[in-house]
Length: 195
Picture 1 (cartoon, helix red, strand yellow):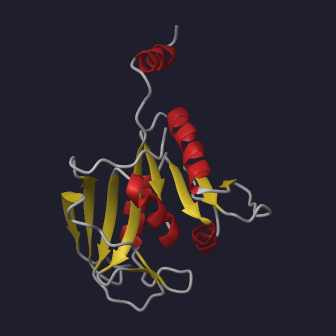
Picture 2 (tube, one colour; picture 1 turned 30 degrees about the horizontal axis):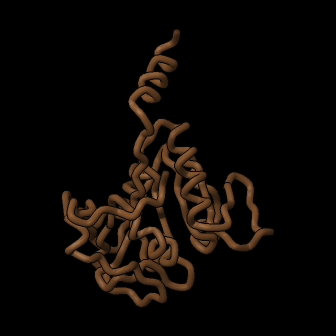
Picture 3 (cartoon, rainbow, N blue to C red; picture 1 turned 90 degrees about the horizontal axis):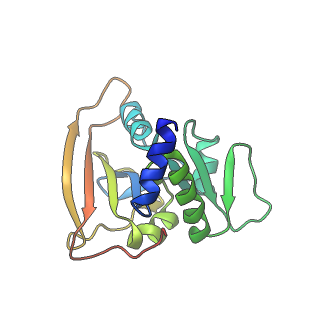
């Protein structure tokens, strides 16, 4: 029996693997996450961070977020939520609801052997998954740009900061930024959205 088969049997014997929903976002100091379907800043260093955080995981996003990216993100299963039944694009999976997208993402996470689903936007998808998220990885962009899209408010009675890393602006960055990891407080359990 191969080592991978032994590992799979051990995981099965241990019971269902928990899959965590992690919101990953870049948020300006004024809460803005977008302007006219695009990021209102250029931060090459932050994009490298985003790639590290999401690589090898299912990433879940709304249709507008996918269209703003313009292509599937390599090395990740791209799951796009859209009520438009005719929407399709090469290299993505389309789900009609948040619940359906999370079910697809959970199956993909189990196949990949990862414990996380990365929710990457937009504002409506963040708002709909915030109540069931276990963690957040938020890049605080030290700018106050105009924008038409904002991240939902982070309630400090629900979310505890567990890690913080300051980053100076690099050569291809418009601003400095801070990466802040949050974990849901033990007193406030997440609603179960991934079974």
